[in-house]
Image (tube, rainbow, N blue to C red; front, side):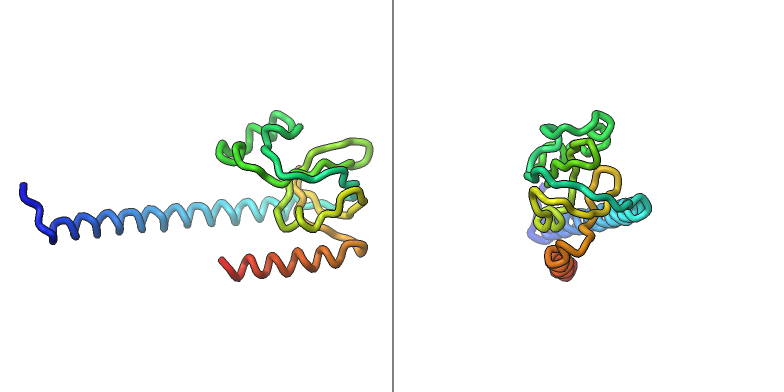
Length: 147
């Protein structure tokens, strides 16, 4: 079994094409999941007023989230640090998750009007923190352009 350079180049080309095809289909699947997730978030979004007690980057497993919520989180996400916000909604103190851009704009020890989708903070509303909201929108535009 003597392999020539041409045989090796053909094998490498076939492997590269196979990897490229796999990445293409994985990307299509992930984009469909993202669209479904965004539609779900848009349909369940509700306004709320919270008092932000604390915000930190931490593991979901260490947060005081309900068992049902922890079961729905993907395995890889459980190991990564995510933005968590401890807030008071009415008489309850709860831990919420949010986007990194919203996380940066949230003020600590202040009352804020937000939009919630379940346990996920979608955006900040209200006139007190419009400067922060504008910064969030500008940052999201930069982020979308970089993609």
